[in-house]
Amino acid sequence: GENVEQHPSTLSVQEGDSAVIKCTYSDSASNYFPWYKQELGKRPQLIIDIRSNVGEKKDQRIAVTLNKTAKHFSLHITETQPEDSAVYFCAASPPSYNTDKLIFGTGTRLQVFP
Amino acid sequence: DGGITQSPKYLFRKEGQNVTLSCEQNLNHDAMYWYRQDPGQGLRLIYYSQIVNDFQKGDIAEGYSVSREKKESFPLTVTSAQKNPTAFYLCASSISWGENTEAFFGQGTRLTVV
Image 1 (cartoon, each protein chain N blue to C red):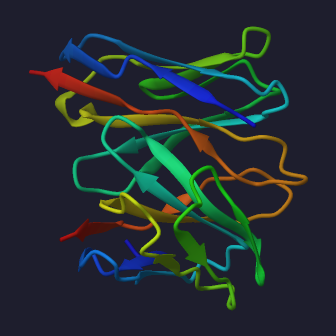
Image 2: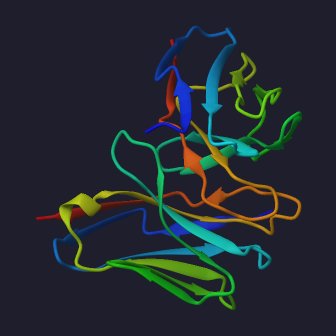
Image 3: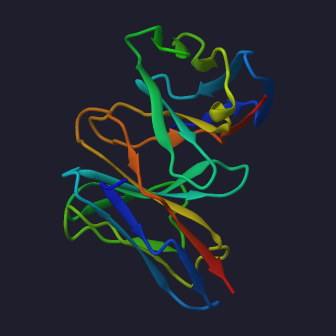
C-alpha cells in the first residue's frame, strides 16, 4: 500500500521568509496530492492540491510542486506570516477506481516568528 | 462550520468499556473516513466507507468497529480490545466514488481512557 513520508517534522522561520515542506510517496500509481493545514485546536482544512497530470500549482503565497519520476511533492509558502503557524499535512491518494482514501504524512509543525 | 459534525468533543471512558463516537454529515458525500491523530504520527486511517452498507479496514483497524447504515452517518466504536485508545479522533467525508476530491473534516473527538 501507499506510504507517505514528510519532512521536516518542525520548521521555524522568521516572518517574511519562505518555508518548504517535502513529502515522498511510495505508490507510483497515486494521482492526487492534497495539503492540509491544521491550526491549533481546529480541524484540518485543505489549502491546496495537485493532480498527477500537473507539475506545479500556485495559489497566492502557496505553491505545490510534483515530481512524479522521483515520487515527491513539496509545499512552498512565501512571505510567511504569523497566521501561517500551524501543522501541515501532505497526503497521497491511489487511483480512485477501487479505493478512495487518503494516506497522510506525519505532519510538519510550522512556527513563524514575528 | 457545518457540514460534518462529530460528537462529543471530549469523551472519557473507563478501561474495559466500549464507547461510540458519532459522525454525521449533511454534504451528501458518499465516502466517509475515520482517522486517529497522535502526536508525531500524523493521521492514521482506521476505517473508511465508500458507500452505504460497505466499509473497509484502514491501517489500524484492530480494536475498532464501524457501521454505515445511512449515508449521513458513520459511527466508530472503540472497543475494549483497543490497547491504547486515548487519542484524538477525526472523521472526514468526501464526495466520491471515482474522483479523488477534497476531504472535509469534523472538529474531532478527544477520547481519554481513565
